Image 1: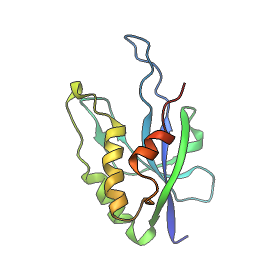
Image 2: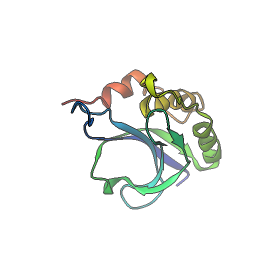
Image 3: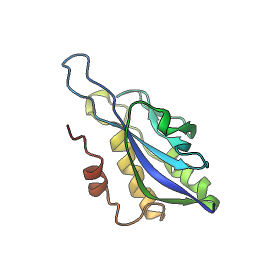
Length: 138
């Protein structure tokens, strides 16, 4: 394989403890690097509003998560540009203001802009289209 298929995966985060409303879906980038379905590397924010952090690649099987909702293939990362891909994700700013309502979706949308500029995300997958396809329909 000369390139890794690139996906965005969404996960259900349950309900808010204070008012019972649904939390926004968690978004993560996923590179399919293995031969087994769902096997690869995840890239995502961890933590909570005001305390988000990015720790880099995580070896996962996204099909083993009971909270996974959707996955959308949006492009590919050539193996020889994998280091650049990781560099872009690590450089994305993280908002630390808990009251801002900023979350992993905001981080992902910023990263998508950079990945698209570098040719990792196909042009037809503009942010508004991705948001529409991954919307939280009840």
